[in-house]
Length: 229
Image (cartoon, rainbow, N blue to C red):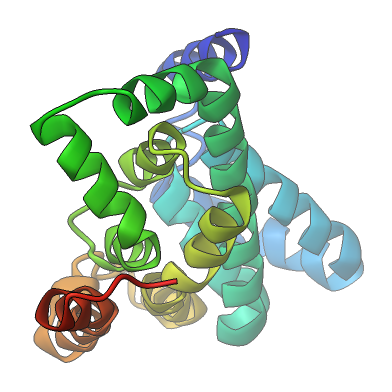
């Protein structure tokens, strides 16, 4: 339980102490200093940003959206997306491992040995793990922290979790990173970026389309009655 307790304590402390530092106002007020440091120390800035992003996600600290915008602002859409996705995937893996070895194994074993409806749900998820993992990553309505914990309780193999996390968060991360890449004009105009852009039809519908595509194996197995690999 110690790893999860540490994450919980740090998350609570961070929620009260870091919200003013990991905010849009802080990014706006310090943008010139950040750009100057990046220009003078690109590698240090890149690895430092990656470490901060891992810490934000790994300890469930506030400011993940601002960190994603910062990645785009400092490193552009392409490199920013890579750094953001890598940092988020590494941080999510830390939570997954903490939950898995804290109490996820015991809970998973209890579910596996259960009977009735609970057992059927568990078996259904096991038969369609890839699809379910991609769905919880692609659908914007699923909180990131919850999507990190659920697989740990369902005995999902680490490699499936890492691959589905890295690939599944790319669409949403790309959207917010591209918004961050255009923050220079937003700051110059004294405006605030549109954080609800991911719910606009021309962006949301393709993501929902990917979610529907991830359901295709489940539908095929339901129709044919065959189990997947």
